[in-house]
Amino acid sequence: MASRNKKVLFISSVGGHLTQLLQLKPLFEKYDYHIITEKSVITEELKSQYHMSFLVYGARNYPIKYLFKFSFNIIMSFIYFFKIKPDVIVTTGAHTAVPMCYIAKMFGKKVVFIESFAKTTTPTLSGRMVYPIADLFIVQWETMKEHYPKAVHGGSIY
Image 1 (cartoon, rainbow, N blue to C red):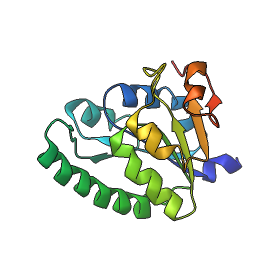
Image 2: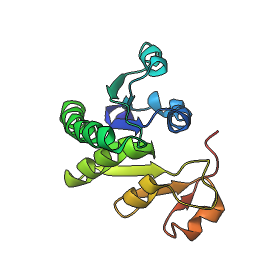
Image 3: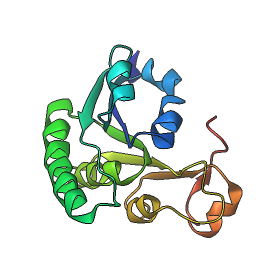
């Protein structure tokens, strides 16, 4: 089974982004996978079910704190990238995932971005940031192709 040797790093913020990412569970069985998300009570419990590592949670409503937490997460993203050595990054966003996508591209790895199911007419900030570098950009609503013309309409992952 050749695909089992391919390392896929799944990364997202907590909440709805992680819920969508976990809908991709059938892929976890096909690849050597690892999940990175933000640490919370809920994600700590998920660690017993999945191969998982954590970044710090950083809400953007506290800009100074967020700047420090985001900077720390960038450093941790480099550490995780070199530790896990993924071939492909798959993300449902948001801000937590953006640095990892750029790190992956710096080292010639593939990036797959799945735009949020909640976005039917306007793009996310993380989507706009990753779109130019994504090898595959998937939208869940046909209407989003207006914002992302090169995207693939994949339909809902729910």
